[in-house]
Image (cartoon, one colour):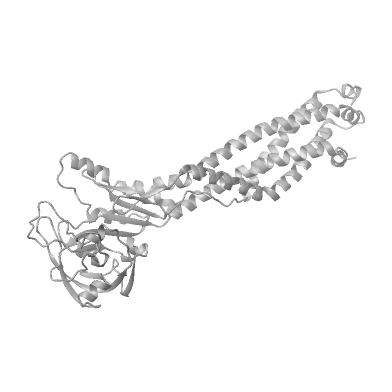
Length: 460
């Protein structure tokens, strides 16, 4: 009789032993599969989290450096040059760039939307120390950009273009997109021109003529404090092409630049390359790749992946020891059977192969069962662990365009789809094969080193 057939008979006849090994192997394989699946899925979820944050990096004012400079007595802050932004924009990872800047402008005969009379107090005008009180105070906010639809108000749907076209890199100089109410108050339509003078602390304002290429409607809600100031009214915001914006006054400069990359996974490489383009001295800008938010998002994933790695190691060691111990007990009860087989002429190799075949068959069945249920059980376990970790992380905060903290719309990763792919199966199968070797190694050594007569002489 072949050793394989004897293995099948032994498995069928020893139902208690078979059930015990089947249950243990099932638990071990289930935990190993879950561990590898969690690690693989966590890595994929990290990529998804990076994509969720977007393939964009901001170059914005470094408020900490600016505060230090002011406290040290520095009277002016070196603005970010257009040349620096252009050099960074030419890096291979960059797909497009958004440049923005803000400055104020005087009325110069234009009609503005005045503050609400019922704002809770009398309307106010911004007071500026060191400025001649007889000078006309700014009433408009000029917003220079090279991509209107990517600016904050349009991106957040606080404003929408209702006529004409948006400002882009290809927009000709002296182009403007004005608010609907501003256009009506000043009897402007597409193609009309108007003049406006930028406001400068040194009095070196320059009057520019703009052509209306688009009209937008503002739906932005402002705070009670903002409603008290003329320049803060959303209707008094005028978008202009960035090149002309820079000519408005000495205060007109780049406030913020956002670089949109070809791939979210290129963020780290881009930041390293971009930092070499920034000035080494008097640099008051920093690159923000949303690294802090990203680390907060994937924090639960990192902890869960680390736990699953430890779990796999513990299961392999503990499972191997338990299964080996049970195999030793099994061989001890089967010494007479082994002795009879050896006395009848069976080789030790074939007897060992029978024992290996028994464990291997039980292991294969257990592995198949674990594959069938791992996604259901593993998914529940991973989501429960992630949800708990996400609660411990707390809310994520981001800075708005003015450097103030605001409530983030992005939550920590608290769910992920558990995927059992070929890599997971092959890794688990390899460890399973290792467990089978460990389980049968010690009994095999005992059989190989024991005299058949000694085995035959012992009773079951």
